[in-house]
Image (tube, rainbow, N blue to C red; front, side):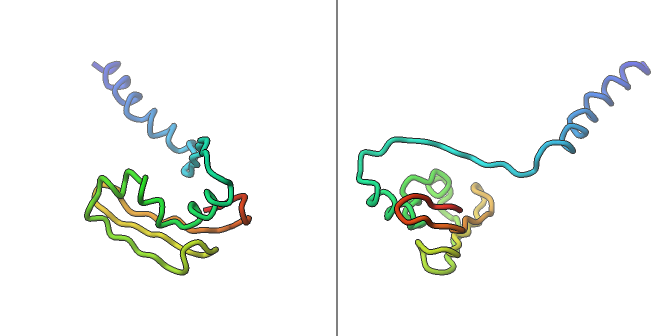
Length: 104
């Protein structure tokens, strides 16, 4: 009986101990090929609201509340959301390299 309790305790505690050492931040990267001129793609993507066209979270959570702060497509623009299915979060444009890169 004592051995079973120790095994159960290990099964419960091991994931909790491992969680202490796992990074709390993560990043996601993806790569696709788009057959459009580079400047056209850049000008479309830097407007954060355009992402709603292909954002699955917005589509699955029709009651999502969105807050837009600043001028879309410029550094400092913040797109914040809060919904039951999507949860809460925000995306901020933190850097723009004209025609090359959008950092958020």
